[in-house]
Image 1 (cartoon, helix red, strand yellow):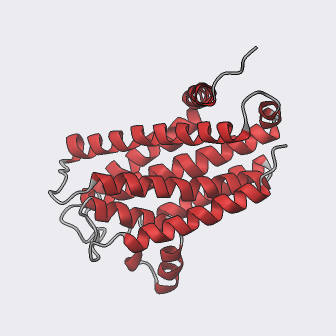
Image 2: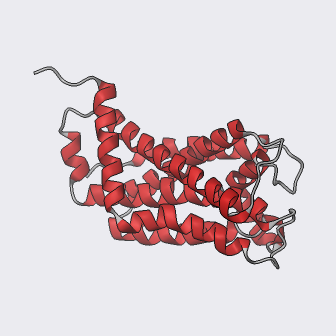
Length: 251
């Protein structure tokens, strides 16, 4: 019996990952519903000092960053930890599907979900909140920012999933999810936080992801230069992926 080509095995596993994601109600709430709620709810609060013409201009990039974190850190990390806990990863490791193909399938599934999230958030912002893309918006930079953000947060998610028990991973991922909302420059500008918190937030990956997306969508309150934010995301991504590869336990 001839084994299926690597690309076909990867696509089949990607389709399975997506089907499983659609069956998890809590995953859909975290990845699809919450980012939209953040966008719509906080766009109605006009007292927050967004520093842009309208709250939606600031909040749309932040909501996209929040969606990336929800999918690549929270959802991927928790499901991978429970797959390891229940022995799913061990069984897959004994199948014809190689580990690189399995990881590629998980990452492709994350990117597919994120593409849906971005499209949904932009549609809600445009149709429901009157957002219009500025003339200097760079969708190419949006794609690069999302890819580097996914690398960083997926690396962190897989790192934690390989080190922590499933129950602990669940708690840690949810704490990080809430902290990213508060400290990630998603609903409140980082420079409006107390100085010590602002310094910490600026060094973590959530804030540079949100800032790079704001530069891409013409909503940054700082000079329009995303190079520093992208570099920080790349460093986080490379470091997290390297550590995850060295420490991950499949059973």
